Length: 206
Image (cartoon, rainbow, N blue to C red; front, side):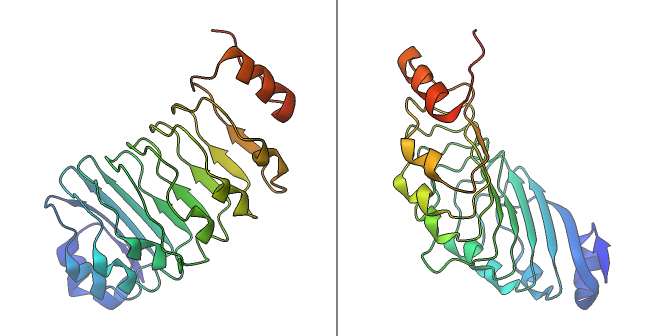
């Protein structure tokens, strides 16, 4: 089992590939990657990839997936059906919305969709039953849904640099949440006082 940085070499030894880090120069991720049945870690860098592929859930042993593409706008639901996926990083893309299927995998513990164009928390976020770390900083999110309360294993939520004007009180009732990062949101002074009292979060004067 080995780490590869070249697609041609990886495709010539498909059973040997456990980790793959490549730069994709086309709009689509090559479907031949789906034949790498022992792949556990996949890193994709690109300036042209526009979407995550439907076939991605064929990578049944994948545990870590990182896709960074300045053209990526569309995320197929199948990415959340990867049964062994623990860490998904789709940061620094152009994603505007994400829908998580109700039958999503329960293995995912780390989700990073920071530095995108999200206006809302991913739909059906509560389906990620094992989620511990949620990174959504530097987006355009303006409100937080009650579905977040159903994340009973969540430990860290990062929402810095968004468009939040309020933080709902139900977040303080989440038993496992120990880090809530909300810097650089347009809170009123009144809301800041409320947050400081309820959550013990201090805001640095500008």
